[in-house]
Image (cartoon, rainbow, N blue to C red):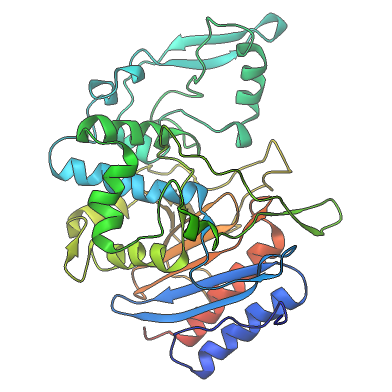
Amino acid sequence: MPAANESAAASRPESAQGRDIDRALQARVGAGQIPGVVAMAANKRSVLYEGAFGLRNMAREERMSTDTIFRIASMVKLLTSVAALQLVEQGRLRLDEPAADIDPSLASAEVLVGFGANDTPQLRLAQKPITLRQLLSHTSGFSYLLWDPNLVRYLKVARHNPHLPRKPLMFEPGTRWAYGSSLDNVGKMVEIASGQDLDRYFRDHITGPLGMNDTAFSLNEQQRAREASLHVRDGHGKLLPQPSERHTSPATFSGGGGIYSTAPDYLTLLQALLNGGSLRTTRLLRPETVALMSASQIGNLQAGILKTTNPALSNDVNFFPGKRLRWGLAHMINLDPVTNGRRAGSLSWAGLFNTYYWIDPSMRIAAVIMMQILPFADDRALAAYRQFERGVYHAFKQA
């Protein structure tokens, strides 16, 4: 059995710069900081770097490979955003008209304004309708339990009261930014407007045309054999491999999570966006739509900073302390450059199990790094991510 920190075979061109990245990621695995990792970077035309290190299952000593399947969780939101914007281009969805015109369940939304005696939630009807633009930019008012203590407090009462809405708005649409379940609603809007379930829509209009054959909501037997296992960090920092998940065929599909992919597949999508919406003979979006999704949609609201309500699932999130962060129609946007890393205007987001991507339009670089660890924003996983990023910019400044 190869050593855990031995590099898997990779098809990238050998280079001194690539070997520096290899050594950095191998060192993280060798020190036991992460069980295994796959990392890739590309420009508009070709892959610049790819590497796979460590184990995809520490208990079974199965090696990582570049075709390892990962649960990418919220990184499906980028596909859902692309799908919605395709339908906007076709005139079947509109960014600034009431989303309830497409999905009536979004009508008469109620906003949580506080709590009364015995923690009774105080609600009022939203003053303005929710729009697709607000859903895509996380300014709709929907939040996530994992990062919103008021939602935690609300649900303690609401779960025992059938008359209270299951998903209240946590603020008036358009007035704040909060990362949450908005993209679940966008996924439903895509299904209604297209007449297809989300899984089929992705296959027909995004993953199929791009050849992303390992990106799906359910896996076949051959794909399951390549799936990375989840590893959970205990209170002492030790990584514990978790039992294999039970695979079922989902009856419904979420625009906000629950999808599988590989680093090569996801990088293909990033390359298409880096290239203005097209790759080879496939056009996903018009260049002007890609520019719109990459521009801030939230004014001066700060984005991307989250405080956990459940440390077992997520650490506090602040990827770029002291930097100005905004949100477009799909990604978090860095308004400020990162030392030895991404430039201003770079786009990024992540998945719960410590999978991450970024697109740097000015440097013409896109990259992805995938691990399977909880909690989210794990310090040692982030250290590997940052080291990979620095290595990419050191190696490929003229990509």
